[in-house]
Length: 240
Image 1 (cartoon, helix red, strand yellow):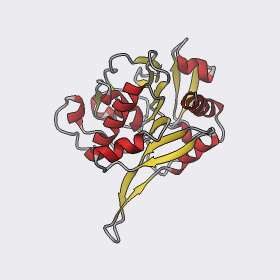
Image 2 (tube, helix red, strand yellow):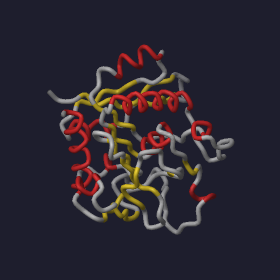
Image 3 (cartoon, helix red, strand yellow):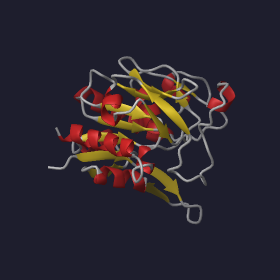
Image 4 (spheres, one colour):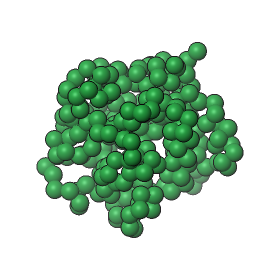
């Protein structure tokens, strides 16, 4: 059977009506389906018993991109002025990640998903790259930029699981983030880094499949074999 892949939804309130809706990012849904999985959107603002009931229906957990993470979850001070925070989403995703880690469920994190996974498992973040890190590498771009357009290379750690999956020592990636991992969670190891030595991917070798990447492979599926390989590897792990 095809594995069910849980994807936490996010909220959007239409300015014309003020009505809130749950939404999912279409390219992620299509990427999961293309790789052989069944996408399953999870609304997050639920009672724990209902969130847990939905969690029990899935075979893998995919943490998608989105807004920023409240610094209280990683022991930092007040949010940076540039942050866009949705604490209820943070709380629900942290629960899902910890449940999945306890059950050794396969997980894939993307951009914000990479960051929230690190936080949920005990790591920390840098809140704002432009104001906290001196770098010539651009990590964030206007939303008008084509999503599949690459921004910079990342070097993949030799002998990492990510290296085994993509089969390359360096790949070009897109980039839309201003927060980034500071300290990796216990048990997590570096899997890829940018030219300015920021964490671009991590994995947890002791787990069946836990890989998180800072870029957006779902937006590169059409033209990038490394992205397709990553999604296929995740779906295979969820199916096993």
